[in-house]
Amino acid sequence: MQTAHSIEEMKHLRSKCRGSVGFVPTMGYLHEGHLELVSQAKNENYVAVVSIFVNPTQFAPHEDFKAYPRDLDRDLTLLESAGTDIVFIPGDKDMYPADYDTWVEVKGITRHLEGRSRPTHFQGVTTVCSKLFNIVEPNKAYFGQKDAQQALVIQKMVADLNMNLEVIVAPTIREKDGLAMSSRNVYLTPEERKSAPVLYKALQLARDMHAKGESDAILIKNAMTKLISSVPAARIDYISIADIGTLQEVNDIRGRVLVSLAVKLGKPRLVDNIILG
Ligand code: PAF
View 1 (cartoon, protein in one colour):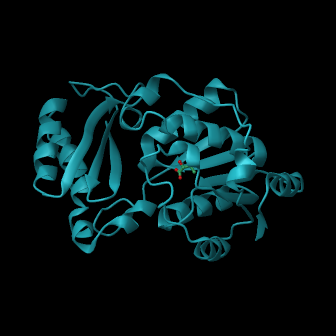
View 2 (cartoon, rainbow, N blue to C red; view 1 turned 180 degrees about the horizontal axis):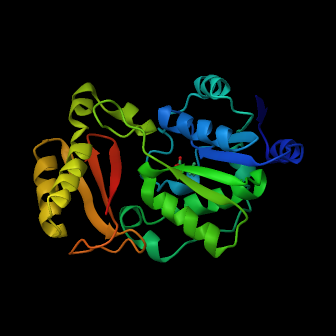
View 3 (tube, rainbow, N blue to C red; view 1 turned 120 degrees about the vertical axis):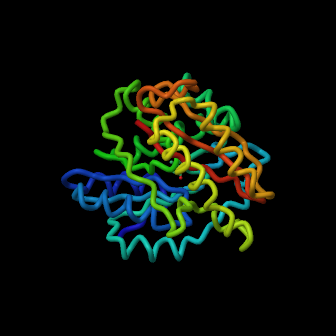
């Protein structure tokens, strides 16, 4: 496994790659979900590149940029055993020099869900991913379904800007009790960790109600709200049933919909989703 600590080094290593390159952008503190993406990238390409960069521009000033969990040594060990070929670890100043002034913004779908609660978040994500795509020049880039809106936003950006790569979205990897794997789960206290599967239980409740013929989105969201509210520490940010293309809320479930939720459980804010239909 080779490591590149600067943009120049990464471009140099990229220039020597032969065959297709699969790329997994990450913010580090890796878990099984990331490693599944790496393994898929490795299986489907000649070269697997992973970036580790906690991107400051996707955090609002009051969010957890400084506290975001970091453990580079552990990440490198995990990536080496997952068969990664190149790890790109740029510094903040390399990616955003003092005179940095260019932003990439997807409108429309970024106004809903996460974008409503975190208005500057997606501009940071699309900007850093554009930069990473330009530097790494991947043939395929891999994202997890857990951050469903992020995956849709990246797909839209790649299509709208005619970027020369394919975006692959891989299924959410869950703990045995259903909790979606996330680097932020480390913030949960033992008590909160016990309650955290309630997010997935609420999504399963939506799936069951829909499977039994319920198409009223409000009724389903009310039942999900009631279930999550049974956990005293849970603070619901949103519960949404939205059209999978536009991310606009639907009242009557007809085609494919994204059922998603964001819930604050103590310190961390957890997100999860499923697709129905
Ligand atoms: O999902 C993440 O970890 C980040 O948003 C990403 C895609 C690496 C961009 O910083």
